[in-house]
Length: 174
Image (cartoon, rainbow, N blue to C red; front, side, top):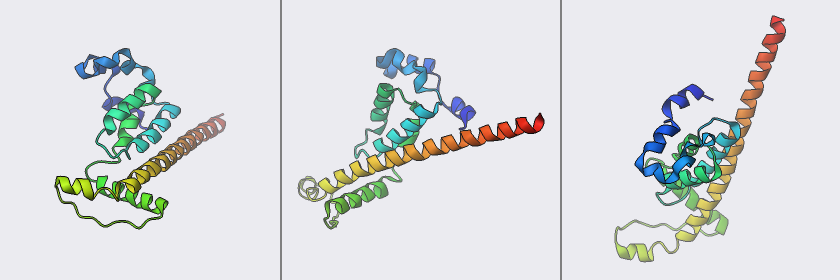
């Protein structure tokens, strides 16, 4: 884990407490559990962040911040994971979620064209919204669990490798 790099990038909790828009959170924003790089806090934040990324509204950062404070999981990890969906990746991610939803419902994907009018929103979204929301939910659960499990296994493997290397070095040096 690149701890030194993350410590340079992340603002200190004291600085965040002074920002006017974070004052409603009070001392909770300075909770050390939100900022320390422990395995459980980081891996769970990564999984939750990946799940939050599939919310089909532009509220990822607000939801991620509230969940991080409520569950006391790592702030930088949850925010980093929510960046999976950004303006460059939102179309393929949400289209994949739609296709997963149509597969789960057993219906064929509908072809549609976007026309920016109120009538289009009233009529053309009706056959699409159920598979889209189901696909977003399914992708959020699967991606969140797989992301958490993958990072958990990688973290444990790295710790084991470092321990073995240190142990071998100690036995060779003695």
